[in-house]
Image (cartoon, rainbow, N blue to C red; front, side, top):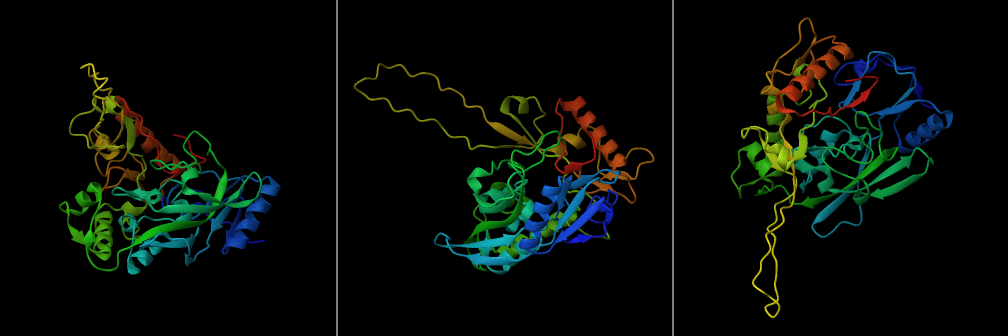
Length: 378
């Protein structure tokens, strides 16, 4: 039993909202985590797990159930890696940025562009965490989970996790339930051994963010330092002296729309195709070719569009706040909603709803929240 005195969730979440729950537990080892979850499920209690608290938006009323804090940690190298790579298994409660710092120090590439993202490793596959064109699905091998229905522990390959843009089978999207109710115990990644020298930076989005030309070569440490500096300028690195970091990061997801809908948006709205455009090649046997070449059938593709651009061009600038509200849009980044000191969950929700309405009125698109909402309605 690892029950502790409940703390206000406003102290444990980066948005700084939420009263103390009815019950709270802390799990510092894998065995404690498994045991606590099985006990909670056997009791039929309402529950949720809490890692770094950076992707949670908790309501003002006390949660009538158990909050389980996942405080496990540890990194180990394991067998099975492909040539030129290293496999590591990381406990779910391990700090994400501490993991990134470890991989950079070890000369292992694959997650360096995700430096500075707050939270824990176990949360990363849940929303397929990513930044600057790099996400965890590119290096994830498998996760170890405990299933809520059976209490069984199993290892699930990445191919069965339904990983997509900021989603997985574990993600509790606003207004829906996760496809698979389970808790991640550990995460296995396979990273490329590049050492500490310079190597080419792959990915146009990352090069663009870092101001690099195609073919440019830099070290992993250089990428990490510059990503951290970029995120810091946007108020996206936790800093208790900067009120802009009292947020859940990007509150709204960049929208995924059809190519047809994207054409209805202004040309200036940044957009990125979600699938590569592949030129179709058709081969006709000469002995059966009659000279007729059918017109190519266009293949629809999805397009990611910038939610930040849509927000700012719907008339909501950085630093915007509603009258008498203690919640505001970040002064550095239009996607982040911030608690400027003592804001209630309802104040933040009111601001979020206003932004949704403005963007929908201007562009016909309803932005979806990225954090997990507990006891809050938009």
